[in-house]
Image 1: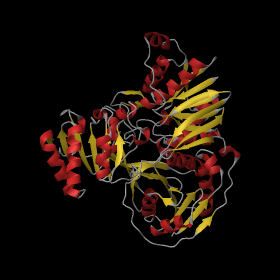
Image 2: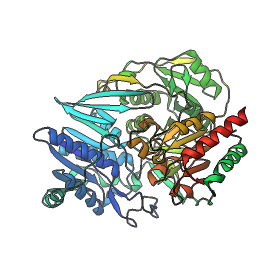
Image 3: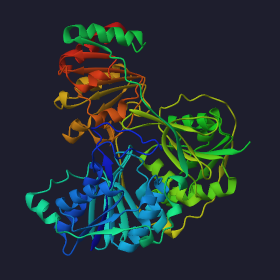
Image 4: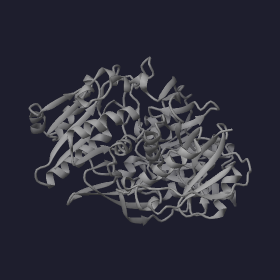
Length: 258
Length: 315
């Protein structure tokens, strides 16, 4: 079985994240890393590989040169190979173009199962897996808190506010997993060494038969008009515990909560 | 005037507040037409009419409940093809966003998610990077598809008297592939919906797993209970109540963080609350930088004393 894990390289959420002059996420001024939420997807793929025979886990990323760091991390965790889709024309692509490129890449890779994280930690839209499924007419079992594969069928548990759903789909299928699916493993020393020898293919838009002018910032179907940093908050009042109770009561009374 | 399609979330006869928020925003762009999925009662149309729905379209195809997400997107695409709406507004729930994404592909429309505001020219406002930045954006291709964060705007009434219209849709086999084979309903907490509540009281690592005081304070204030990821990961509180980047985003009038340090992952889910109170033993906790009122102390002492005083005042 072949599993493709979609992984995104994102700016570190604990650092200063900003926008470039063209309204896109500034990827140059801060350190990037494999999106934490995609580590859960890699982990689930590796668990399936641990459990079943003959499972190949290919990590796939779409992004500029630096995105190789995300690939490296996934290979160190234990993925067997990688595809880096890299093309200058991709810069500024919206979710629609991103999903179109990834859908073509998935067709070319021809996996049995695609595993994604629940959302990226920068864009946080959480729509790309559903968009890819729509484009490929593949079943999509999304936002799994658990994931299992058996007999050409994938099963997830999806928890929403009112119910816990069990979803089944036949392979090939695309799934996404949440941060409830299980802690991602750290790369072992052996994994770090082994990663250096693992194959990484580079694909361009031409390799996927995609017209460069159909993607990128100028072809995006939404446009950022303005970005502004939220003004820093005036420091509030901080009191010690003994004064805390009357202070909170006054605060609640002033806001008419009591 | 052109029509604006909204998807009205509801539980049987109860229409959820975000539907009224969508109608309030939709009226800025055109005449709101509400789509309701699944079996409903006539009272749903009446409730949506209160907030300005000029038509209410009911879709009851069984595929809607039997398969995940895709049938809803397909049904909406068919409705959109026939009424040619000026825009489509959907609530920013995980499912709502997936429906919106699929619809954008089908209709060839631009998509904006997690907006908190829409102007009359359909430009949107979003809060991004854990609430540290504000982005104004607009859709430049097709009828804009926009998902709206719950609790971002105050619903305003504009009474109309729409009839409930049954709409027949054709759900293709391609949309019937992710089968819902079991549905385990969750028991209700009896408290307001987390994303709709005016007051949210949240507990974190500092609770040590004891949420009794957090829950009681929420109850005396008529609020909802939330939890940090640390508390959820520790198994102290269910995931459905997690506030933060991978849980719910809330923006209540008042947010009380008890025993929560305020890591970026948590701030992403509550930073835009109108007023913030933090109770934490650690004076260096980053949550204090966000708090309008910070109390350096043990929540297990502060909260019970506050609850007692509130009860005394209530008599």
